[in-house]
Length: 117
Length: 107
Image (cartoon, rainbow over all chains, first blue to last red; front, side, top):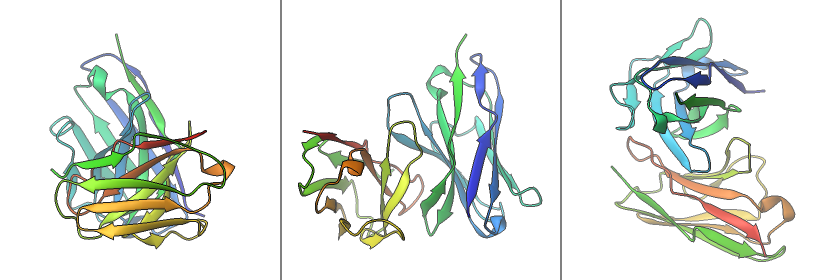
């Protein structure tokens, strides 16, 4: 069974940093691209970032480019999202998702990031 | 960037109704479109990929159609479990943008 388990969310002050993790199981992690998608409270889904299976290619939404870094460790079956220079509008539930041919066929339960002083 | 526009934003319907949600892309995306269902407090769930392919385990009352810039998600006979929010997403090129969502409510 495919499982994705995010962690690392919490309360952080504006301008601060946070690193999210997503531990994957039940599939060959290095064979699949992975995505981060976020959802601000009461709002819709926003694609944030993607990384190819081997990690050589990364992509970002304009809203996070230059502040967030996606990475992966295949030895640990773990996806990361390093978030720097956090702003209030980064407050959201962050989901990791396994990509299959471009679309996301499995999602984690999400981790809440709150940016507030 | 490709913009995705869903309509309506809210839809009120009854059990047994046939409903259709529309998603329009700002430029052609061929058939690189997925539909997701999200219930309150839960992660999204994949329903349809490649515009019209039904994900394994998804009831056959869900169907998708369209290509180019206009797409639809149809639920042939609404069940109580279907009241949720639905999102389209293109995966033609990065960034993979979502529609703003359609909330399906009980009439």
